Length: 231
Image (cartoon, rainbow, N blue to C red; front, side, top):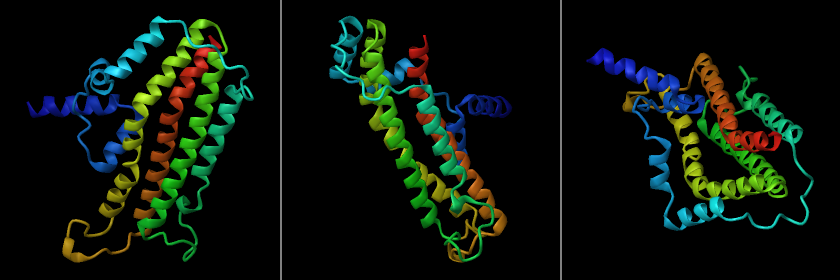
């Protein structure tokens, strides 16, 4: 029985999105539990007012298209924005392997938390702006695309607060991981000794991986809207 449960846990973890797997590893969370299917989860998240709005968006003609679409955005714009964010993560000096001694307070978590929050804000700002512009393009198109724009706006309104609360937990999970990497982390009386160079390098790589996976996660709605525009 234990073997079957372990195999089930492994399968669930492997099938989870990369971002979820990384966060589960940071927090040592139980990623093996079978998540509820999407329809069950949406039933919990969408209240009566949102359900009515969603039904209206699906059944009635979409609202009039905007009179003008500001600087129509496309795949090239999204690709450039994404690449800029990737570079800002990969080229972050704090996350470089073995930065020069004394250049940054690298053995305390506070600078890492500050940079994590800053990079998250940059991702949120860029993807939010692009998503809005892509919706404007859809709204100016044929009725099926305009209807999709309305549905996407409603789903963002419903899901964004939960998504932001979830993403806000990333710095805390990184802080927990940072603390566990300290020698004697399980001994509360041992004090907070400094991380070794190898442990710091491992943490920097993990933080880069988490931020890049978060970036992929944040771009998923944009990729869906771009796919609709291509079709």
